[in-house]
Image 1: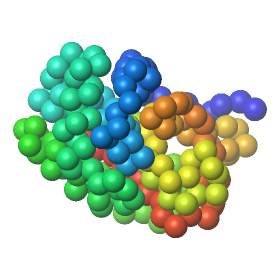
Image 2: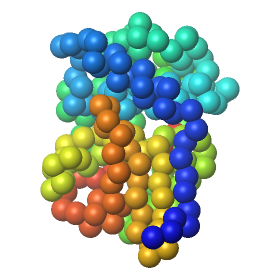
Image 3: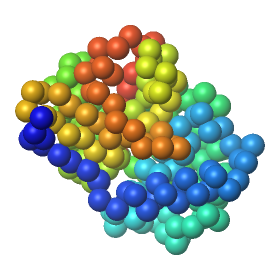
Length: 193
């Protein structure tokens, strides 16, 4: 099946690989890893490195020490089980505001259907912004109760849409229709510009 649309963030791989190295080398017992903190850290670093307006939020060289620092700082604002877009947005705005520049949330005033969700994600990727996704109590165990960081997507001739995500520990592909139509207690998307 031919791909008719393909979008992916540039330069995200280095940020993701750095977070993997940190996770492999450190136990991080005091960090709430299931709270979305890794995905949010990667998103914030990406925005700071790729948008001059946000460079003050993370203006260090990306390495193990600087990543551990951002995790420790964010850990103060992100709850143990941050399960809603509102909770995450509050934490992100508080953290980035203290760093000198609040991120601007792009709200989603759309009906919950495949096309509008696709357009929202595409808008984030076009804005050179990772899109955060939450799926609470999703049937697919690989994506259940997780924050994901959407870094790209592909649309095929037959209309199928795959989204490329990082889970904090790995890259995965998720069928957008499965996510939208799958039963879940809570779903949400956010990105910043």
